[in-house]
Length: 75
Figure 1 (cartoon, rainbow, N blue to C red):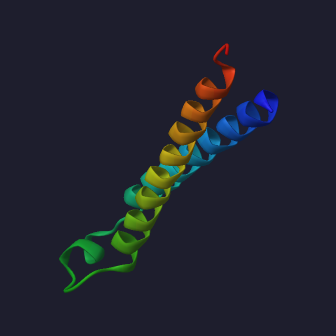
Figure 2: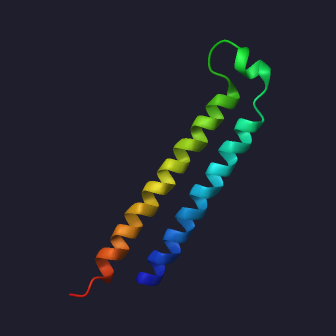
């Protein structure tokens, strides 16, 4: 069970890292037209989506770490 949890923790951490990098790449591709337009733009919406995904994956990783620690305690 602990091996499965470690694998899931690593997968969640990698997913958080990937969504962070994707959000930064989208941020770097933001043009001047995106910044001066009216209302929400596609770039801003994508950035927001990637950052929310990062937060979700980080939360999953933290929950899995807590579960791992609880299960690895000696009885």
